[in-house]
Image (cartoon, rainbow, N blue to C red; front, side):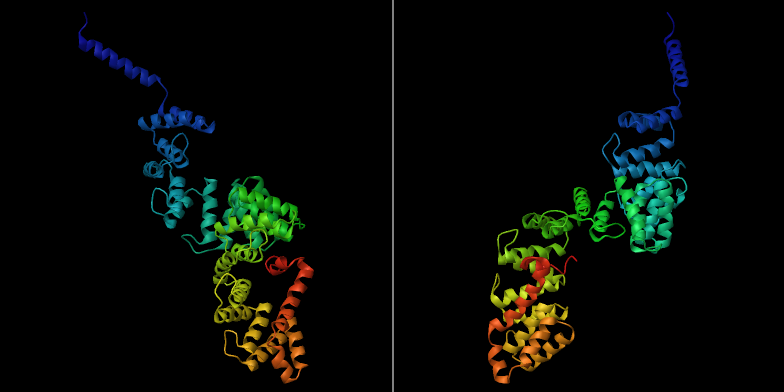
Length: 434
């Protein structure tokens, strides 16, 4: 019988021999890369862990990528940062993941300066690094905003095949940032970006088809792209889909559908939708008439400076629709809207001064405002001024007390708009989308 020590020695020697004859840490690592390329992430993760345990430094960088993207494992930005930092300290990469984590503030406190530092180390080797550097110059993140430098980096990233760069090159050409404005070139870049499924590009394609910028105007295609953008959850998209259904551009008119999309847009934080929702509640088109809800949404729009919302709120406070009668508040809204150039509100403000509604009665001031508005091209003010000038003082004093005298001029404004828009409701919105 052989001694136990001899058996153990032989066993140890065999183990060492087996290890020596087995795949090297680099082979295991490369096997992991192959599995990752084939999207067999569980197997790739196992290989990277084995390579790491055998002291292969590049495995740390690979594991950082796996945890950052959630490949074969639940996303964990803390672990991604830990592995990327270790890889970087060992001189085995990790720069790109560190750049991303510092840029996005995931797994570590956001720090644009550090992000830029890591991206610049690898800009010539990692295509996405050029893309993110471009973004940082475009938005002025960690550096002074510089559109020309951003354009150069996006061009570099595009040459390396980064899809997102197409979108930003589209923006550069659309707005003339860092390069001469050119809608046709912008459209071409957005189209290529959309074909690469860069989500934000679909909204700009819808916009450019709607307004005929760089491409022949086509409302049907505009609506298609806005709907595509909505599927991508681009926040502004529902607003323009609402516009399309409201006016029947690229589709049949449907106030109910328009109202639904305006509500969705408002929930997305698109404040312009509040005015549409409020006015549709006011008229009861696309939804049940509800002056209380109309006042709620019109106030939101008015607080954002919408002069049409202020006009309607003035009417509501003057007549007590959905709110208590408050002629002072009515006059304030008319005054704000009139100062913003709202012609209907200008006529109402003149009325307030002639009749003392919400302000001290002052016919001289009312007449002076009427002259001012007429001189500025308000056609109804011109007609109203002519009519008042054709009367004697007694007749003026009697006539201005009659609501019908003022209403006919307000109705004339609306009637003129109806000839263009097709309905009172649409006339209200003409200034929104031209």
